[in-house]
Image 1 (cartoon, rainbow, N blue to C red):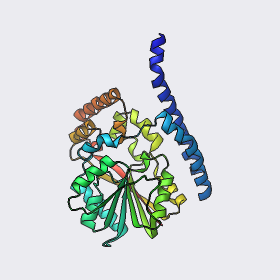
Image 2: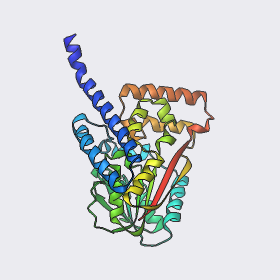
Image 3: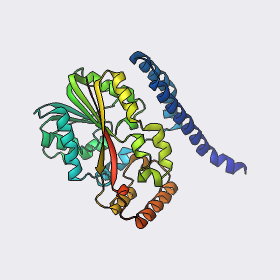
Image 4: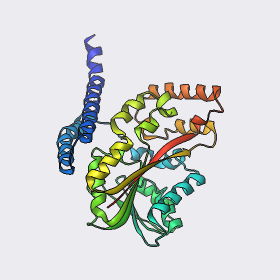
Amino acid sequence: MYYAVISLMPMFAESCFEVVQVSLTVIKRGVLNGSRSTGQARAIDRQFSRYLSPLVSFGGVKKANYRRIANTYDIARSMSEENLELWLRLISEKLGDHRNLKLLDLGCGTGRFSIPIADRLGYSVTGADESSAMLREARKKDEGAQVKWDIQEATSLSYPVESFDAVFMSHLLHHVDEPLRVVEECHRILRPKGILLDRYGAIEDIHDDPEHRFFPRIIELDRARTPTVEQVEKWFGTAGFKRVSSETIEQRTFSYVEERVKKAELRHTSALTLISQSDFKQGLEALREYVSDNPDDPWLLNDRITLTIGER
C-alpha cells in the first residue's frame, strides 16, 4: 500500500497544480472583465502573472510540443484551397490591396498563411514563431524566399516601435500565459492606423464541437486557456486598439466525415496532443462510432472560427 501511494503522488501533484492554475486563470478573467480602466486591467494582469508563472515552471502547465509535431503539422492541419481563399479574401478586405504592406504573421508555425499572403496578396511578410522546428518546416516550403522568418517570443517582440502596418495571428493567444501582453506588443509594433487581425476558435464556438464532445478531457484544458470573443475584444480595448469588431465564420473544414476521424487520429488540434493515450483512444473510439452511425451529419464537417480586428 505504501509503495502504491508513493507511486501515485506525482500524478496527484500534477492534478493539484492543474486545478490551481485553472482556478486562478478563470478568476483572473473574471476580474479583468470587471476592471474599469486600461491601467487597472494591466495591473491586474501583472499581479496574476506573478502567481501563475511559478505554476507554469513548477507545476508543468501543459502546452503543445511543437518541436515534436512540426514534421507532421501540415499533414494533420491541412487547409483546403477553398478555405485558404476564404481567409485570404477576408484579410485583403480588412487591409486593402496595398502592395508591399508590411505584415507580421505572429505565431506563423509552418507558414501556412505567411507564404500565400506574400505570394497571392503581395504583402511584405515576416513570419515569427518561437519554435525553430516549425520555422524550419516553413523555410522548406518557401521556395521563393518570399518571407522573412524570425524566432520571436510573442510577449517580448524584438521589433522597434511602429515597425508593421498589420499583424495577423491564427490560433495563438490560447498558447501563451499572458495574452494581454501579446496584444499590447502588437499595438506597440504597429504603425498609426495599423490593423491587428486575430483568427481563433472562441470557447463558446468550440466547446461542443466533435473533438470536445468525444474527447472530454480536452474541454477541461480549453476552458482554462481559450478565451471568449468578449474576452479577446476586452484585451484589444485594454491594449489601446480602436474600432474593435468580430465576425464568426462557419467554415467547412472537412470534405467528408471520415476525414475528421483521420485528422483526429493525427491529433490535429493542440489539445489532443496533451491528453493521455488512454483518454485519446477512448475518445477516438467514440468519434468513430458516431461517424459510423451518423455519416450524413453536417456537424462533423464544419467549424466556427472568429476573426477579431482592431485599429491602432
